[in-house]
Image 1 (tube, helix red, strand yellow):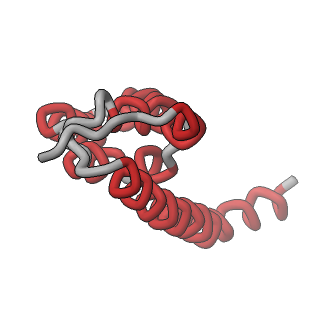
Image 2 (cartoon, one colour):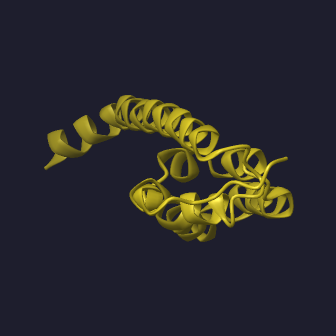
Length: 117
């Protein structure tokens, strides 16, 4: 792989939030080369989900920076940017889906709670 050179104009893209890392943390980690972390985070999501949430938020905030690293994993900055853009789109779709399903599942309980109040 060719070592990519970072242009100062790319700093904003590298410091952007990563919606894919927030909502699809283990998959995002695996795809971005953090294999051991992906396995640990995946197991954590199944065993102790409340402890896994801060890790997802951490990767949401800093994941793009860590994924870019020194650029050695990526053929070019454009490849990195394209990958992160696709992950953001998929992450937002999954995030909205989680919200809608959560509201759909919670609706009967909320209705019951409001009727009793």
